[in-house]
Length: 269
Image (cartoon, rainbow, N blue to C red):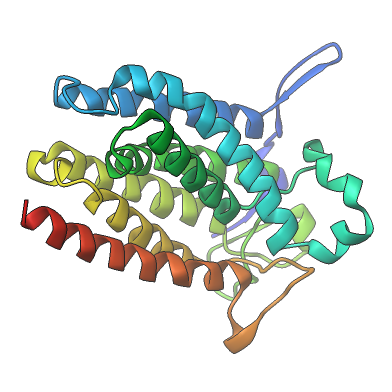
């Protein structure tokens, strides 16, 4: 089945009232923050808030998380995906309304604020990272759906019987890789995180959920990158892999090491 994106009548603008324009992509970020906030607080209630971070800590941490994601995502895009351009046009790095966010940069930003917040507030680093890992797939799911609505970050050309013709991608059908990512990195990953979080013995062995999150997301992203069109300014890199795939390698390895370390550590507690 070949679908023409234009026939779907998708509009990147969600609300337009006079000079005020609100895009679906912005609402996806908002929904991700609010949804993640809600499920993280729900997870705290599973243990009656007897551990920190508790619900009050989550309320306080949200501002940190938002700043970490936005600043990390933007800085990551500048450094990982288009550094030569921004070296010549440094002020353009501040024009976030023109787009350009890197998921791996956002992750680095969040990891930074998780370390800082847990240290300053004297709470469990891995309990906080587990809560973030549990909540994050909601934002991934909504964000990838918004990418599809925008007709951006589409997949490679397909010769099969299923594809979407995107206006920005020429006349040939392409894989709807945004939807692949929404399902795998959003829906399936959230189900895995939820099952682990509901299991008391896993939930109370901090760091296991974070390790599985890094490994699973990294694996899904690495595989789906084979269907996704690489960034035009970078193309394919060593061994024919994309920048996104190379950034997933340390995630997978780091997640595996974190899981093994925390498993042995908590096993002896």
